[in-house]
Image (tube, rainbow, N blue to C red; front, side, top):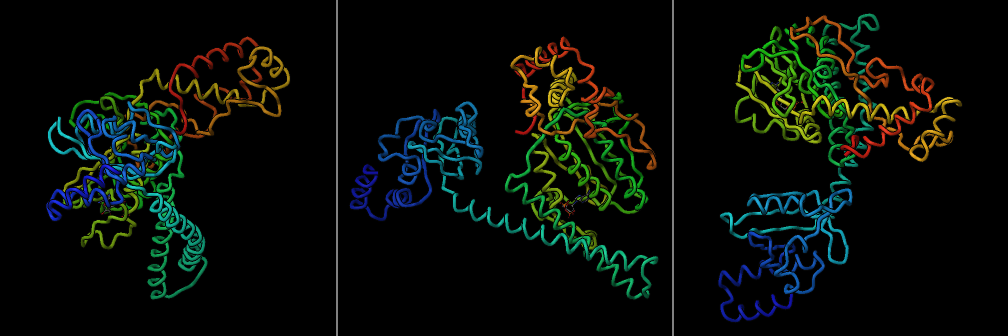
Length: 500
Ligand code: ADP
């Protein structure tokens, strides 16, 4: 700080209006922290605001150090970010821009400040990089209050709107009310508006949950083709109502090559997948005229599992296409104006997909139809089997065994798991539902009336095996000991599943 003041005072006397002095003034008096580093990450300049936030008194103490030791970061859960995973370091090394609001700066005294931070390269590979950051505690507090307000308001308003919708439905039902044609027309409009409001409140609630990160991820090993098929098949009634031709799967892939029936595995949150697919298919139905076609497919694609929802609907012009995943964005043209919507569906889809480390994008030709793609990192069948085994074992250990088995288990299990009745299992599962792995449907498209195959259910009866209760009473002490060993090996040998 002293260094700045002295230098500044000297320069001001020499040429008070020169660009250099003005730049110095900005650096000295703005509340944003500014650090200039060289291409190896060494601090060349640090302004007073950055010094304050990082907990240093003098610029000399920080200049010459690696910026990683000056800017210690923690994530939202309070876990410190190792240098090897520091996103700023990665951006600096690759000479790329980077912006984030997801981290706290931990000062030299251990004080934590939530910051918005950006890194900007100043030129070629070996040029300096500029890091700017600011304290966003107040901003986050206000956003939190806003989110809380929207969430409470949406929640409170959902109930009366549902009741209005219900009563309007009754008024429109010829078996419960008699109304003339004009009243029917008015009430039909009111009914549609109340449905729209109901959807808006539901979407708003979902968005507030996303925004304040309340929604936790529960990744489970999933056979994606059958899981997607089950969700898509549930939309058959809506598809039929609009006389749409629905196809699931294909004997050919998008490039026209023959595709062999396959299984596709990924770590997926089943609730998120359902929300994603429902939003995409509901949109495909909504934005496709009667008699059009909808094709849903899921398949392996290199290191990913790729899902597509393709429609022959109204399509999206290129200008709009780049915005459709933004919050509240709705395409406004003569065709879409009469179609209700909130502009939140695709935003929710994008957030959900990205939370599962996936990617979503769309291709479309105006007037010809659209394809929405979702891809997730794929896991091998061996990894899928291993993860399933971990879940089964974890579930099995959480059940209360019968007296006889409990006794045997106590002898066999030693310290790995407690069979104390009051405290049955230290490794209780995280209540994540387990999808039942089944083979995918035949490649040919099902007819709209085809009965959906139950797939990704939360039924703990996995792969046709007996339930946990049955399993426990069938177990010998030896078997339990063997399971214990397998379980221990798996718990130490691979990535953990569950929330992240
Ligand atoms: P909305 O509630 O308006 O449907 P979304 O976020 O789901 O909100 O979609 C944003 C916009 O993207 C929509 O308003 C619509 O114009 C466009 N859109 C989404 N899906 C399709 C589709 N399958 N075909 C044509 N336009 C679509």
